[in-house]
Image 1: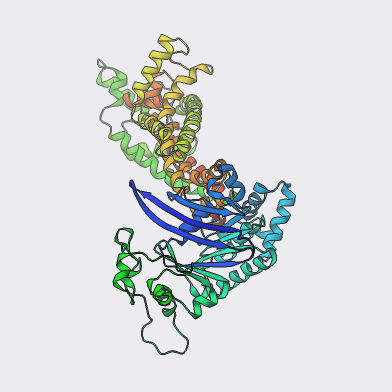
Image 2: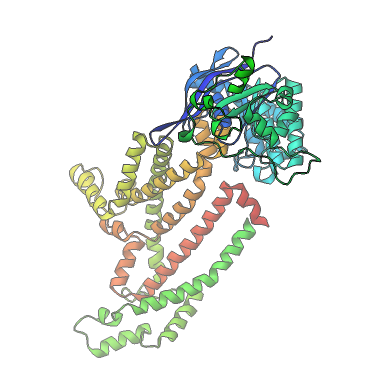
Length: 322
Length: 309
């Protein structure tokens, strides 16, 4: 098997709020192979975005801090890089697109300027060449009248167009890894499908690995090769999309899948997972899902389950093994 | 943009009309009789009456206002009761020194205010921020009469570097413009800081960082221009205040500007001069507001485009 392009090992990230340290991500392991799309799915507050920002080392403003583990990119630990080295990776080897296309572009700068800036930051080419490349990228993501768009401002574009611009910008230096943090959440469904198409094309043409963060299981099923399910700052289950959808093992994953409405079924109420994600202070000592789990056992409250087979974090699964 | 400006300037005319009426009424509400003040304490009633007659002060108020407005439309601001000179000449004479002092003060204020504001926002809650904000709070709270006197004491009396007052070459501008600019710099610094801190939380700043830009480029290209939008409004207002002449600073540094003219004419109840100054200050403010709005469009493309519709 080929080496992973990006591998996250035992990553711990926490926030410091009023002198208190609040853990957001606790010991995540995740690998991304060349050309692969891996979905990271979970509820709000499960630590998906924090994981992606940890990889990009963009936690400063949050203000969060990686407290342990390593993020290997092509075998080198990004966390040990100097600021200068980190900047060389950002936007060049690893790019990111964000949830909010409406606010992710600078409102006072023309689209062209923002694209060219990203290109020239990492490539030693002239303004004219950079401009040509920018127009080419806009064409690639399916933007009509790309020459004109170069001279327009973000507020003149729709949300879907802006997200295309973000993708063009992220892909302009031909990165090995693209991190997409809920790229379609803020868009309506038809636009969503178009954006997913654009991303799939990008993967096909550039062999880019994509870490796709979302809470939408439908999108995961459509886009991803593998999927990791996050809960309370941990990965509770991972596997291929087929495995997860056909045979989910963790009760949380089962709950998530169960809450998708089924076509043709007559249901008054949608299934849902009872309760809410516990706050950091209220997290159970053992399994973090214990307070909401329909299959909870005494043992679950005592000890946190490890990742059995590197795939799922549930004591039920240990019983099967035994 | 030209069409917009012309529309705005035409809109100022009725406003100035109202302002002139209010100014006229308030000026005449000031207790005290200019005729008596000019004539002196031992003047006879006849002498005082003569002065009233000469300046039309014995007419009913509405008549005085109509005369004033009729002259105004012919470009005649009347004559000073005290000096007998045309008010227009006096204003023109005083406007130059005030304008040049204002420009010099704004230069200080913008350079220091923006620099300090940006540094403290970027280094927030670290020592450069604390130092900057200490300076800014000092700048706002130190009264200009004290700062001006201290500067004269140190730089003119002790060190002998700059003159104590009067207008002349470059060196005469240093102390008064710094005295005036310090307070404005402090306000600009605080505004820039809070505005920039808000902008730094925006998503597009994160986008800039995710492109691999240096922190300098992120702040310089992406943050500052967005942060400047509210700062421009506030600086415009401050510019307007300075342009009305600073009574205290001009007095301390014997600066022959509009501020000193105003305080002198108020003391002497020199009605035509007071009225004309108020009208001039209003006009200045209106023009500066227009300038600020035009500058807004330059900074924010969104406003520029909506303007046409």
